[in-house]
Amino acid sequence: MSYKNFAILIPSRIGSTRLKNKALIEIDKKPLIEHVIRGAIKSDLKVPIIVATDTKDIIDIAERCGQIGILTSKDHESGSDRINEALKKFDPQKKINKIIHLQGDLPNVSKKLIISLANIIKSNKCIATPVVKADKNEIFDENIVKCVASFESLKPKAGEIGNALYFSRLPIPWGDPNKWHHLGIYAWDRTILEKYIKLKPSNLEMSEKLEQLRALEAGINIKILVTTEKPIGIDTIEDLNKFKQSVLK
Image (tube, rainbow, N blue to C red):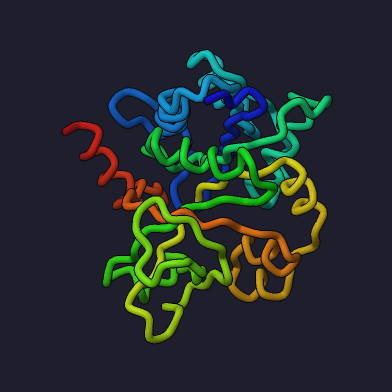
């Protein structure tokens, strides 16, 4: 299958708050952002891989991996804003109209998951993002975002696609044993990204501190893909150590 109008974009800023210079922390002699870039290469989509960053050090790493680094403003409040600026600079003619948005601190997203998201937006003007069944210890964790989605089946299995209804840090929906842990990986139709960037932060977004609610409040369809995968997001020392152990096995 051809993905000629696609690109993978990875926002990566140097000013992380919880882990200083997180993108440059070395794991198995490679900085974290390099692990993310090499994971994107393994997806084998054969599309431009663009790292949108606010620092030359990260651009150098992207170029060392044979990929593209674009310098963006230090003032962006979100990764979506950052990738939008990078895309405008790289492709002002808008030949790229489908985007896989990988987080700069998610180093082990699989080829299968990236391709599955790409296939959803290939024929849909929407946002697509994955969920995995939440563990018991995650249900009441406010750092784990939960998603309520509608599916055709009562017990959705891996590979099923539904529609997002809401996202929250609380354990929703009440009474349903299936709580979905939202994974921060997105696939965008470019027109939807451009529409989203122009929207003001919404009331629900500011209340929950979740950007995806801005899209839902604006009537933008978010497709939900069920997966069994749970990539390790690097936010704390514990996360970092967990990823180190997985790499060094």
